[in-house]
Image 1: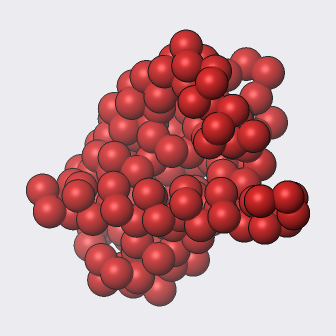
Image 2: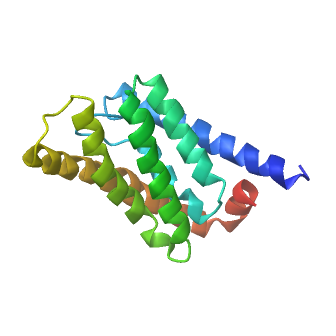
Length: 167
């Protein structure tokens, strides 16, 4: 493919499809949504370190995954905004690859309790919010912090694969 725009779109689509597939795997085990969640696809939120195509890729993937898993209007708006915010933060931290998971962890820790409160899954209130922020944050530390860092390390150690995937 010689056209850079087509290459960019293909990378976006590939990342979005992978995000959806990993979310569906998480959903099979009841881990893709709720107050306690470890959405495996969140590990992909570090990919903006390697390609800007990952920003729209994970954002579109999150939207499609939330749609397919029965997400509420709040999941489709605020939840997707959390993923977009994390991906943009990872892109800004691309010089410090091993910190790229921090924006995703923080944006989900802050936004997702609101999604769950507004959707009526947890009661409104400071205790509910902060307890949910803690459980969502811990899930993000596992999914994005640990698995995302493993992914960064793998891609760093395999530059040939990284170049093939991301140019």
